[in-house]
Length: 197
Image (cartoon, rainbow, N blue to C red; front, side):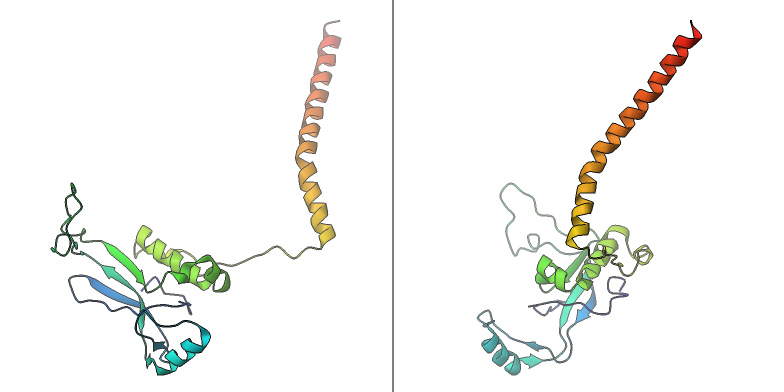
């Protein structure tokens, strides 16, 4: 899939495995866990290090589906009779044929704290946005990876000099521009006075 092309790895912390139901929607698996992964069942799973270690050693090991895209149409929960539509609202029976859903088993993968440690997750998010915004045909045009070009580290003295230079540069530029305008107007006035004497 274009969403994961060019990505070597992604990190999905505390992710629940996905189970895709069969239906009219076409599913495309995007990411799987490693074969050494273990799933812990139940909402009462303890996440402290000691309990997690015990649960993971006893958990069911295997590759688990962690991310996928689904291509519609999708039947509405309200239209299927599973739920009642809110009062005064009409239920839409299904989505348009070209509807698409991108599903990941966790929201932690795109959190700021995770992105600061694992920036490759941002590339997955950008690829998903490109796919939904531009479609399959244009997603490959965008650069596969972003290149970071940070400013070289500066000493405290150099940082102070740059700070004060930035503060003073604007006002000095305005004063210099005003002085040039004043000089040229004065020169033009002297020429005009000299020409009419």
